[in-house]
Image 1 (tube, rainbow, N blue to C red):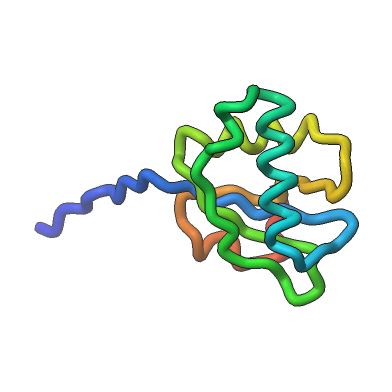
Image 2 (cartoon, one colour):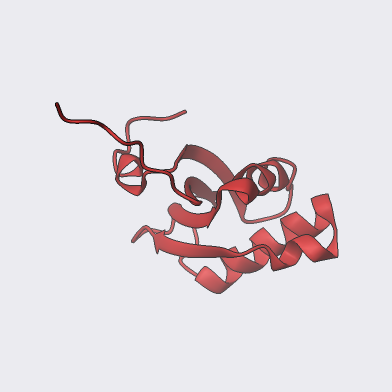
Length: 105
């Protein structure tokens, strides 16, 4: 009998919509750092994350972060009022699940 073993991932993927749209990954990274600093202080600006993808029109992006930091990143961006504004549209420990655009949280 075949036994299934769950996959445990230490990373988590978050997909955000960006308003106004921007393709500048450095500006997105700065926005993420500023939102984390505003919400959680200076040490949170060093939170490890990668911008994996930005859409061609700059209206969406996907980031990878540690599982334990994903909630902190989402909370920081929810309270961020500056521009550009990033709004969580999907999140998952499995990157391919973020590919569909019509499945919104």
